[in-house]
Structure formats: structure tokens, C-alpha cells
Amino acid sequence: MDEPTIALVVQGGAGPISVESYKKNRPAIGEILQKTAPMLVEGVAALRVVEEAVRLFEEHPSFNAGIGSSLRYDGSIQLDATIMDGSTEQGAGVGAVSGIVHPVTLARYLLERTPHVLLAGRWATQFAQECGMELVPDEQLIVPERRKLWERKHAAKETPNDQVLSSGGTVGAVALDKEGKLAAATSTGGLVLSLAGRVGDSAILGAGTWADPHSAVSCTGVGESIMRILMAKVCADAVIGGAGPQEAAELAVRLQGEKTPGTSGAIIVDKSGVVGMAYNSDNMYRGYFTPEDGVVVPE
Ligand code: ASP
Image 1 (cartoon, helix red, strand yellow):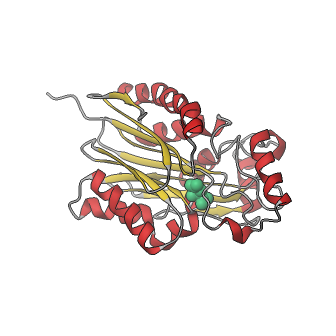
Image 2 (image 1 turned 60 degrees about the vertical axis):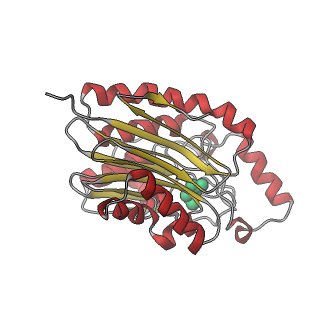
Image 3 (image 1 turned 45 degrees about the horizontal axis):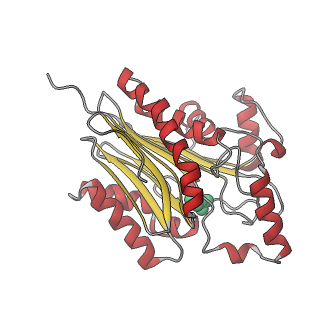
């Protein structure tokens, strides 16, 4: 009998990424894939694997999620995340939540322990505490580089409205497990200088994240633009309509560019383990694992 197909794709954000930044942070993508792909090989469920990949990104100070998140206009840190199980088509998200390193895990708790689909603000932090998650001060999530960027923007008198076309970075993962189940997860610190309380696509099922029995998708880019076209759902529906994963990712990104301002990117895996990755920004941190190709992180 044929070995069941498995596959994993991760993204660390699309946007104005310099050649130097890409070179510096590229190895981290490979490391995260090296740590999490074996879980799929061992038979761990896709939902758990995408959560773990995103947790590793959230712990990495170079990516805009968890530790290393962008600062809001008021200097605070507020995080968005979603997780979705393709086999049940159930998912959940948290929005503008403070005080935790791993919003993706909080989203999983919301999915597994409550009937709710979205929990936000200080009530989400309270729920995290009730779930036994460790609460941390913002200082623990702020890295010097992000603080300096915030200070520069404040000194230049930039406002939240100036940020509409910028994208701060997101992290995400999509996977197909040995049982043929798909899952997706996304997490972000949001856009630098955005208003406190702003919730982006990474908290919204269908916008930043989607998974169904046919494919799993995670998006990155300007959240307002992604939400306006429900980009992850557009991408997944293209697969249902007969498109291949790469074609579907390109279609979703193209639609975003045509209909809304700014840039974006998408990663996808389908139920056959075929992967797709597309973006219309300078670059996108990305990589994938399949048994045939091993771990692949584009130069
Ligand atoms: N999508 C994220 C947001 O708007 C940011 C990003 O992916 O760059 O919050």
C-alpha cells in the first residue's frame, strides 16, 4: 500500500522585505520546518502541527508574532491569531489580545473549549488566564528593532492612516496529515502604528485563514485588503472549483491586488499534498516540506 501523503507549508510574512532581511531570516524557516515536519511523519494531527509551527514563529524575535510583534500607535502590543481544522470545518480566532506569547494556542483553546468563533481584547486575555496560560508584560514581547521602528514613525508624525498600505508581517502554517486531514493557522502582531483595538485578517476565518476537506490556506499582507475580499476563502474555493493549489494562490493574490490596495501573500496545501505559495509584494518568507522534496526554502 502507498504511504499516505503528508505536506507542510509555512510563511513568515509578505511585504517590503529587503534582500538582507530575507537572507538573515531564511534559515529560521528551514529550522521551523525541520522541527515540525517530523511530527507529520510520526502521525501527529495536522491541527497540532500547524499550531506548533506557528508557536515556533511566535517565539522567534525576527517575525511579527508573539515575541517580536509590531507596536500599536499607543505603544501597546495586541495580537491576532486563528486556527482551523479542515476535517470538521471548525475554527476559532482571537483578536487584539495582549499579555501572551502564543495567541495561536489561545485560539485552539477557544475552538476546543467554547462554542465561540472569535474572542477579543482584555476578555481574551482573561480567558487565556483561565486556561492556565502564562501572562507576560508587553516588554517581554517587544524587541529593540520594532521599538525603534515605532519611535521613528512617531518622530516622523506618521498616523495610523499612513499605515494602510504597509504590511507588518504575519506567520502561518498549513498541513496535511497522515489521516488526510488538513489544518491551517495564522498569527500576527498586526500593522505597526495601527490603532489599539484594530483587528486584522489573521483573527478572521475566511480572511487570513481557512481550512476545509479540500485545502488549507494562510494569508499575509495588508489585513484590511485581505478582509475585504475574504482572501483565504477565495483561495480555497478556487481549489473546489478545480484550480490547482499554485493557481489558486496566484488567483487570490491577483484578486487582492486588483480590488484592494497594498500587497499580500498566500500559502496553501490541498488534500493530495500539493502545495502552492504566491505573493505580490517584494518577497515572502516561505518554505515547505513534502516527502518527495524534503524541506525546501526558496533562495
Ligand atoms: N495581515 C497582517 C495584519 O494585517 C499583517 C501582515 O500579514 O503583514 O494584521
